[in-house]
Length: 87
Image (cartoon, rainbow, N blue to C red; front, side, top):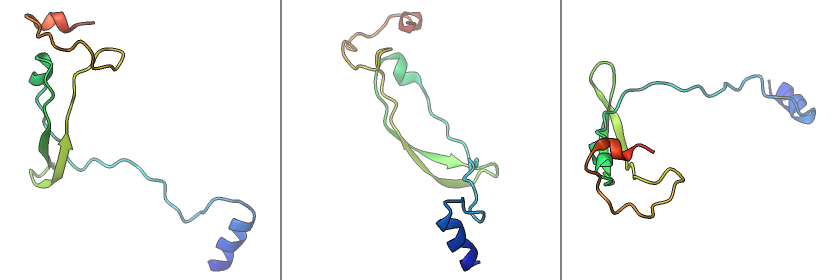
């Protein structure tokens, strides 16, 4: 096997023993988006809950409101209606 790896490395071929990384669902997280309606960031540490309702870890998240172009300027207004946030 060592000779085969050396031979493959000399000729620039891929490693046949390597596995491609594939996404794996380990659980779900529930995050409320209510703070975005008032243009407030909401940092949270949420539990990752698996299909058997066991906590598999924690996810630190902070969703920050921004303009459609990605800037944070002129976000000091609070809309009266949620429909005012469209566009």
